[in-house]
Image 1 (tube, rainbow, N blue to C red):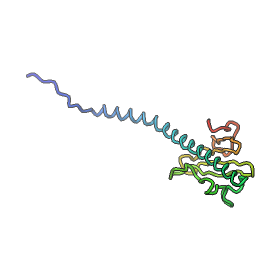
Image 2 (cartoon, rainbow, N blue to C red):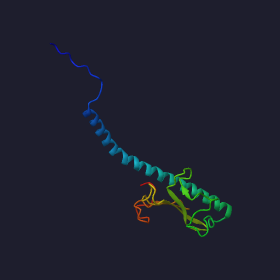
Image 3 (cartoon, rainbow, N blue to C red):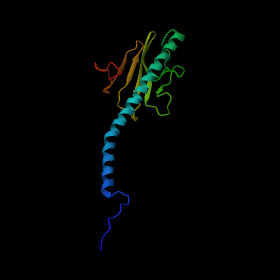
Length: 155
């Protein structure tokens, strides 16, 4: 009696499926942290854009009032007046990651800050600042102060 070769049913064996799942898992373990890092970087870039727009709003306020003083809410935690600029970023999203504040203000100068909101994905990323003279700083190590190597947004 002669046996016929078995026809392939076109399916996968359990071992093949397990190998494919293992490869997909390894790829995911490598790619996911990179993806998360890109999200953090993207939200930081949004905050930088918000600070630049906030600085423009401050210049508009000064041209109308001949001073920067008064652009913040009196008695607040340095929040800007709602007529000057929104107090959180990103401005065009329901999910906010940064508080925007006027850290220092005088008749002819200001310092604006974007601080990551506690409990969000940006928490621990360090605050960003821009001054009326255009100096941009980022507390990259999130130690609460700007060190000598943190005098730029691009690091």
